[in-house]
Length: 385
Image (cartoon, rainbow, N blue to C red; front, side, top):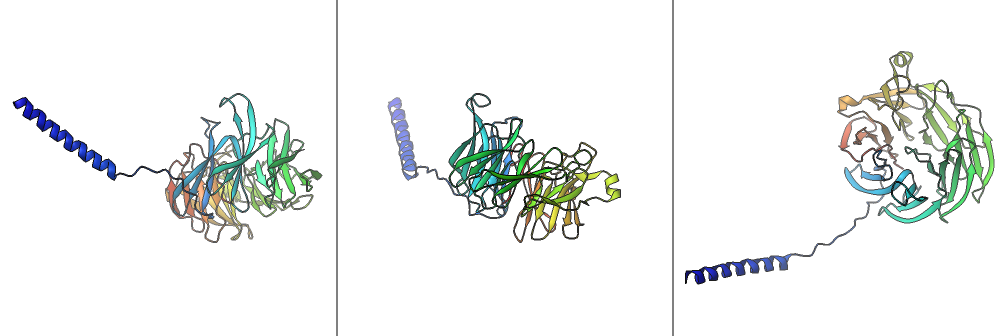
């Protein structure tokens, strides 16, 4: 009798539990997966190409909104990518390599077209399997001013530039650059490449993307005594090249032959003696409207040109005088290996630390605003169109 009453009681309890579960599940709505669009373009959106040296075939580009301090998404970027953004900010171009077996197998080089509103791949252009695979540079994949032509720098180790029609989505041709590397665009039909002699080769292309003319300049970089960093900053067709020992020289590539400005120093004799010099992987940033040049500086010796910066020095490019000196440690900011500045009237300054923290600062005062911890694994470059 007791067993029957116990069984009846247990049945009643289980029935109640089951009824509650049915009611709960009936009230629950099935989970719906949605994909949000990237917010409309803002000059405070930062694109950070990230190459992990422990996984070279799996690069990506992180997208971050510095106004809301929010990670927006990422673009898969393959092996050793080049990266460029269209003038209308709607499309990104990723020049990269894929292997059929991950890190080996049949090689395919492509330029992938990315819709910046969704970060989806919308198309690809197969290119010759020779694009330069190295730490990203703004000029290993670069666009003409109107965005019609895309230049992809190749090295096998012979050097050339692949010319692509972005509207037709096809390769127009390949131009031998005779040992000179990268592609610094000027205007809609011209690019220049840097040569190991310290000279610049300027190539003009015709409407079909074929070579129309070329001109080799005199040497403007002293490659033996004071080499220049390849990550020049740009104001129109004028580029600002910074040297290992801390001088600046402009190169205007708008004509068939470049026009070079006089070199001027970033450091005084006393500062040079103390070892102050530029360093990092992206050493300079330029805010064109305010004529401000930002330089990542450290105390070092010959061979320390890749060392991160402990200070950022700010110069007025019209007077060629330093107007600010930011001690990063005082702002509780780690040393920086790459810097960039936004292009708007209220600019933000960005930096990447060796541990891939993204630092956001006020570009006018140097005041720290935000630090996004470990945005990537080995972030090396900041792109802000």
